[in-house]
Length: 233
Image (cartoon, rainbow, N blue to C red; front, side):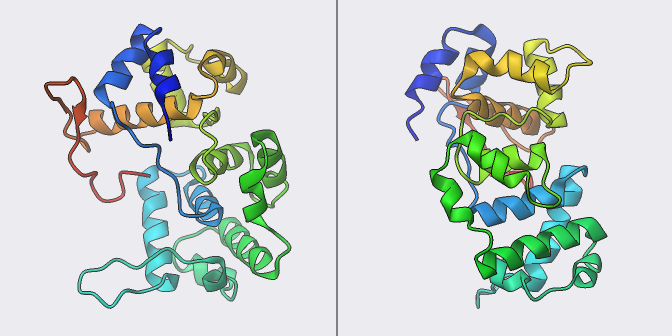
């Protein structure tokens, strides 16, 4: 991804410039598939990041492909791996009944062809979000999360993301009671790089929590140690 435009944008905003310098060279992360992004979004809905990661780890352990290598972690399950599961199976892993039904329904519809997530890769972001919110259990936050993390729409900053709002308050003086529309108004001038700002704010939050060892090198770019397990999501 060519982020030249983002760095040019950041240079015109002192607060954004500071973030871009600290994490210079960031490569926007993206899940391997829209399906994986959707399941991640469902698992993390209305939960802390740590709890969501634990749910996903258990899901991969039971349903994900295994590698015959000592110490290797299982891969993430595909829709065919989850289509035969029942909600009670996922309930035993810690998923709520509603989340279990949503994950299995998405898997089954994907396998049957009723849901073609690949076509969304070529749709514009408004079409992506409109299509995803029609799925049971998928709201605006999940749809925007998938658009950014699963389909690479870097203009999307999930406006309902509580962590993002807290970071926007810290760095950009977003008002305390600000809602979705306020976030959209603040980030309008960052188009089409709102999602890139989101990732920079995420890294800043991880650094503040001690998950990153950030130090400026002689060129002013940030050096980061590997993220602690699970901290990258």
